[in-house]
Length: 245
Image (cartoon, rainbow, N blue to C red):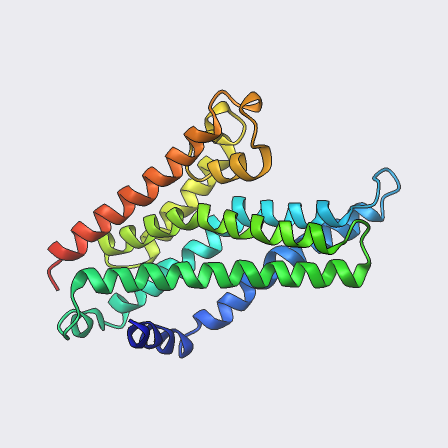
């Protein structure tokens, strides 16, 4: 398994995904830094604290970055096999199609966890450099585990994208679909359905965590996310095992 994962990493190391991953790491912390500078320069607003800055960064990751950038990484990891026509050799060497799919899901999951963790570190360094009020070790440790939890909650989006790539044998159409989902997400977030819509449910779980603020409970939010992940993996498994190459 380690050799197979290393092989996946080696393929990514020689692609543009590494550079795009760096953009993903920096995008949320720097975008929110600019917003923080604008707000702090306005006397109408109180200075943003460390907890507020880190929370805004995480919310931006779960609501926008995950749907647009993280899903693009997932689409590219699978889609480049079709674009470069390497999937034929991948599925004809002594590796089962199920193992091949599992490797892709594992690689996407690991990359997402690493990128989110690095985004957390970048945001932490920015907060430390700006000496934001409220910065302490106890809050930082708690925030880190919240970031990790949020990452696990957005993984089903990526599994859904992998299934779409397998379905269309390319990454362009899946990303169009993800773009449309992002638009739907903005509309759903203003209704009571945001708690059970898988792409907004992570925000309900991480930031609200109160049954009183939504028609649906936190349990319903978990159910929606788990259902998306299981359904996506099932259809991806069925698709790759029925695929003609």
